[in-house]
Length: 148
Image 1 (cartoon, rainbow, N blue to C red):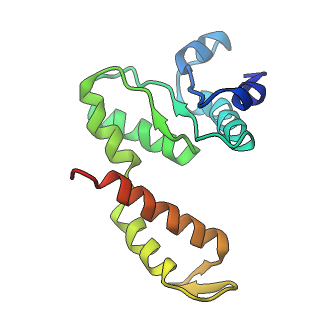
Image 2 (cartoon, helix red, strand yellow):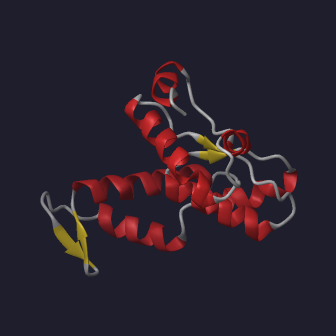
């Protein structure tokens, strides 16, 4: 982790060996124990202009709820994907990385705004970063809907 930023500058993409990391720091493999490392990897990738990192595995192979929750946590932390170790993990992970119907509906409203400065839509502030978020959500939706 101490070299994450320099590694990110030369790697095409970085991935998190979360179990190895937990063992190395004598911690449990839990979201809380791994939060600082995930944050550092996301920051390292962003600073290097690289794609968001790939998060470590979920050891439960058939607990769809656990895989979905772990994958959603990865999304919330800024991870761009998740390492999977079993075919049963694929669909819950995909579901977590797809934008929600609520996010898609909001994003559609946001990109329709022509206001250059800050404005309010449905009681929430909208400005340039929010518009960028909306465009990213719609691009993700388009990319993940292929074949659905």
